Image 1 (tube, helix red, strand yellow):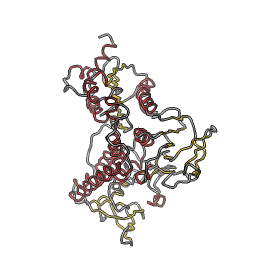
Image 2 (image 1 turned 120 degrees about the horizontal axis):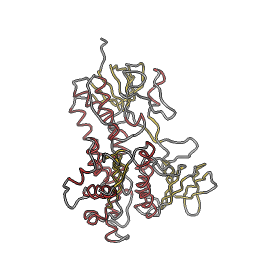
Image 3 (image 1 turned 30 degrees about the horizontal axis):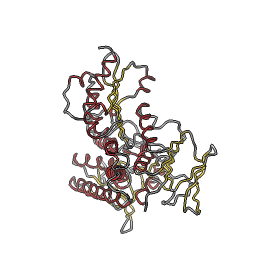
Image 4 (image 1 turned 135 degrees about the vertical axis):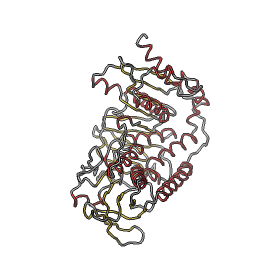
Length: 468
């Protein structure tokens, strides 16, 4: 057997890379994590999941958004909210999470290497050191690519990071705009659109698709659209951006967006959010024959192996669903497979959390998917306003929706929009994991008053529709 420097070399220190490295270390393997940036955590901690969700929480608190239904639309904790106010909380959380990641890797005796990695061959990686300069080659029996993604930038767009920017630039803005156009109505674009709209920014959302979030239950999307309208956001769906240009005039610097339909949108700032590109350019993957698509995303099999069996890829760099939660699981599964450790998981039951305002979370199949598959089903719904806890927290428009098989009553999907959706969904997820029936919620006792009672109300609604 060949002697390698490491049993496993992980390229990238985001959620997928962390979990892969720690899993292998717990199997008593020699593990190293290579990170080209001077800080750990990848996009998740530094520019993506953690900052955006913390920013959202800061906005919800400082703007008084949660209390407006009780105290009126003018209620706010702070009158003039600045970018510095929002970043105060965000920076604190980022530093805390960075410390936790470093401590976890060090505690599990994972070597941390600050360098840019590129392939020499299928078992050898060249490391170019970020701080001190120089390079060296290291070898590993198995290699896991967990480099994540970066925001996609179109060549003809004049990005300046100030007026025209991508989500990776957003945390460096020096002030909040009065108007903002968001080009691209994917998850990231909608999350930031909702955050700015809650602050009173006049938001325009542009997307060439005619429906938001096509993978989400249509009724939930309709509710989200209603909330955007209530916050004075304008949706320009079915519109394609032709050109974006910065302009200057008497009213200061602005951005003009030309649409293919002939419409023009004038805005103070433009967030360009049309997707993300795999961070694989520096890896020299072509030299060893690794396959990627036109966005730099790597192709893998069910075990997360690339077309080179000893090289795995996990996390956002392999595409959908591009969630921190699923990325962590992919990292664990890849490490286990590499070293022959059997695993069990339910990939079809991962929960999807979308942190718009209000937040959305879904698990299982939606009505459109069941209709297409020809599966008979019934639905049960509970409005937050029907539940005491909904009245207490002031959420008048939240909705929990259960979908279950018409004949067996097996729970097939849970779809929620409203406060705490990303927490509530796990109750339904657990029931589906055990092939539970909707009657479970009727027979179960929930704490009172809680939003979890929505499950019982929705279950009764669904069963009553059957005339039982």
